[in-house]
Image 1 (cartoon, each protein chain N blue to C red):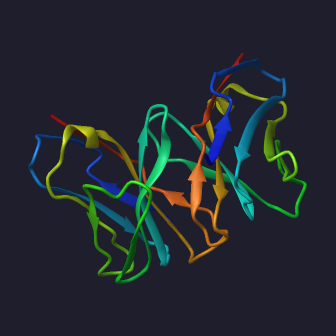
Image 2: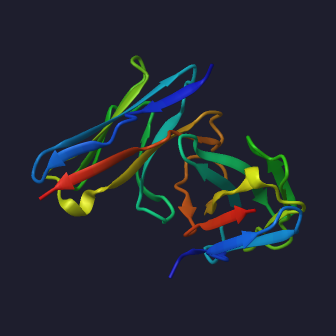
Length: 113
Length: 112
């Protein structure tokens, strides 16, 4: 089954404790992206990747890191989480650049205390 | 400033009626626009894509229109069912190369 898999589904952590949210897709997609979703603000792009070893900032990249060492994986790293990073996070992928539909993961609800 | 607006209030309709959701934008000239459905606690799911040179697109009970003069897209669900209850997001491609900006979404509730 074609899918984007995120882990964990729920995560509670404390300020400053490094964490990684994993994302994997099995559709051989070139493009992958991370979004955060907050009430009243909608989905906002954090980082995206056009292909292996190619990443770029989205609209709200501060406090986040990503890497794309393999085509299928695109982890999101919070080196020093803060309470304002409490949010619902989604990973998404699609075929290449341009007018393709995005496939989203099921989301990671992160709470930073 | 650049903006995308969807009906901010939830839309409540009776089963069998047509639901119409609005997506308005300013200061963009998108090459295409997409609509997604999102259920509570789940990731958005793609529904339809319409390009700037297309006026209307249909898929089963769904219809999308795209008016680049009015800078507006309308999303219609005909013969609505309680299972259609969800939040619907519009997304614009703002640079012609796949950078999508999402609206905040409109929550639709279809009552039996």
